[in-house]
Image (cartoon, rainbow, N blue to C red):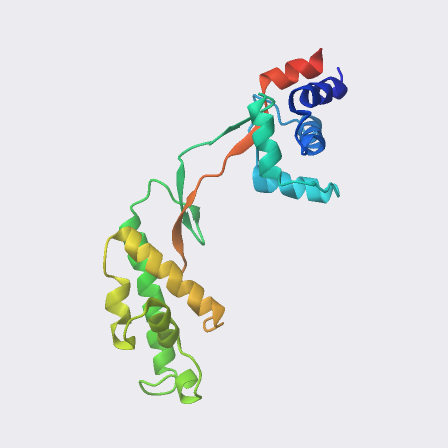
Length: 209
């Protein structure tokens, strides 16, 4: 059983590519770490971390080399589960849940925190505003491009994806200004389920020759 066999195969098939050395390094790492056809594979971001932890520096992008390895059937990629994931900042993946009440609950928590800030000075003006600083309402109104008095209604306007987008935008603006370090409301957003990578059965057969 020799990894050299696989290296020779890659060089024979992709010898004209500048990234051939990177390809052999990546394929060897996948083999050494046990990322084989029947396993769960590894996400590209995780693979990058593993290579960095081993002080392996690639000359070309990891995606470029993985693409070439797929071209010659050395590496396979696939998505485990749904293509789109719904992420709750605190709870993680929430696919299959009823999103509308979850999103509205987070919007309620945000507006409650905003109202609490506004009452913290003993009246409708917040301590931050009294000091000439930016308030939660100010930050949200600016980033959403609405009048401060319309923040609450604007956050709840539109369909669920619209509300999710505005909620996430508002929370990020609040965090950027460090306005609510103890916030108990969270972003809810969509991401593409990342590809996973592993050696193909062909690659394992080549190594086993």
